[in-house]
Amino acid sequence: MKILLAGATGVVGRRLIPLLVQAGHEVAGTTRRTERADLLRELGATPVVLDVLDADAVHEAVAAERPDAVIHQLTDLSAEDFAANSHLRIEGTRNLVDAARAADVETMIAQSIAWLYVPGDTPAVETDPLDSSLPPYEGIAALEAAVAEMPHGVVLRYGALYGSGTWYASDGAIAERVRANTMREAPSWTSFVHADDAASAALAALDWPAGPVNVVDEEPATTADWLPVYSAAIGAPTPGNAGKHAATTGRPVSNAKALSLGWKPQVASWRTGFSRMNAATDAVTELGTAAEAAGADDAAKANGAAPSR
Ligand SMILES: NC(=O)c1ccc[n+]([C@@H]2O[C@H](COP(=O)([O-])OP(=O)(O)OC[C@H]3O[C@@H](n4cnc5c(N)ncnc54)[C@H](OP(=O)(O)O)[C@@H]3O)[C@@H](O)[C@H]2O)c1
Image 1 (cartoon, rainbow, N blue to C red):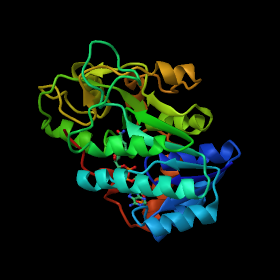
Image 2: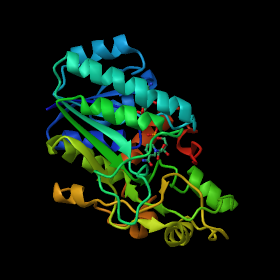
Image 3: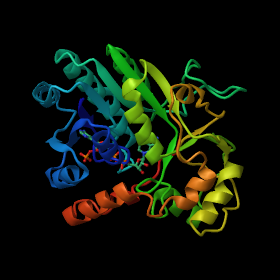
Image 4: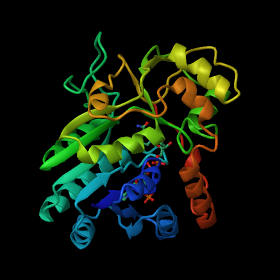
């Protein structure tokens, strides 16, 4: 298949390109920055320099590439600008869907999040309602609704991404908060997913039926469970109180649907994943990091500040 990967340079996108290529797909990957074109070529994609907020440019790019599927891995989170991220989810997704439909593209796979389910006593499944009314998450409902307009639209509700290049990496913002003991008390659940497994789900989703799918690991955790393990993994003392951080919800999230579709996380639990986070297992990401360092446009990117809610 010919794939247009929007957000090809992000935490998931850069891991996904080699998976798509190895599976026999031809990949065109987007970035706004010409200096990242070499990174995309190294990873195996043809670079497409594009700002998805420019509707005309998106129409032109999709019409020119004529992809069989669009994979949307766009976020705007490096600078902790949640208004910009919401705007991207709303307008960027709108532009992508309109352009894809105009070009008779049937399939779109899009990144969403798994921590907006309304509170409940049981693990959240895809048919449970979301509460995306409050900032910074008002863009999620628009994103998911737009993708549902596609003949074949699959929404991947990712848990909290961890792994190299994420906020949870040892040089990331969550690690800094833990080291600084600035996390605030918030008894809550987090469902994690390693960024490599998030990428493998996006590849698999090309064959999944339309609709939302939770993409989380096997062990939803309370902060009291994961924080000591995480702290040990980054060599920091466990903070004296439980932490407020990204991706907290009032309930665990179920991955039963993804498992039933044949996806299985290679890192079944954050328990083992945290300790492997910065090991050589992230070869693809290391390649990307090296290429970016050579491009030298955004050394600060990996240290982008973490969100809170
Ligand atoms: N579920 C989660 O927990 C979750 C999900 C996503 C991100 N995050 C966290 O957020 C942090 C930043 O994520 P990230 O490294 O993936 O970077 P990011 O800055 O959020 O960018 C992601 C991708 O979107 C692209 N993009 C952004 N705005 C665009 C626009 N207007 N037009 C076209 N492309 C656009 C970027 O391309 P450019 O090359 O043009 O910048 C990049 O390819 C990481 O720590 C990550 O862990 C967490």
